[in-house]
Length: 196
Image (cartoon, rainbow, N blue to C red; front, top):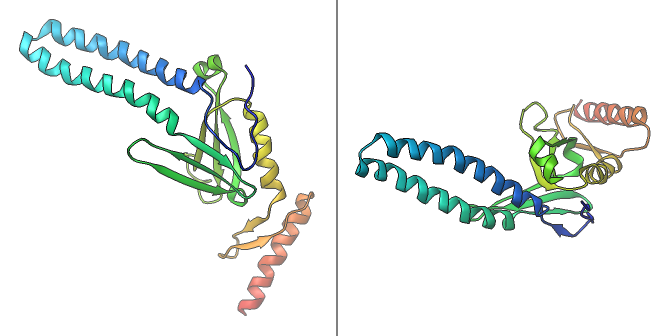
């Protein structure tokens, strides 16, 4: 499977394998709910079974139609300073995460995703690091290692945000983490000195 080239300033969609993944999950759900509907029809009178089963079938058909629309609505974009994503058919969501806030990028890939050759990138930020959920999740990614390295390259080269003083002081980063820490300490001390 070829990986998608990720370029700064160009929007991209998840790999088409994500759509196949969604449809496979749909089929698995359909099999489980189909067995449930068949058992309802077997044990209930005709009209009652139909009253219960028809709405379930209608919802399943609606979800089948909606999956394609939802997949097409997902758009990711990397810029020199941030990552943004948009998604949603009826209820649209937009999010922007600056590289300076990213603390961790994890790659998640279950067995079904591995079969399709896709992964999910979960981005943790300074404000969300104590929570279980990632602030931003990029689904349907091929070449997840390359994308993670691209993102982390911008995270490492950009300014860090020192929040120890309660404010947000921008501290330039270097290649040496010890120098970065010393700069953050100096920045915090300067903030304390200004307040006194």
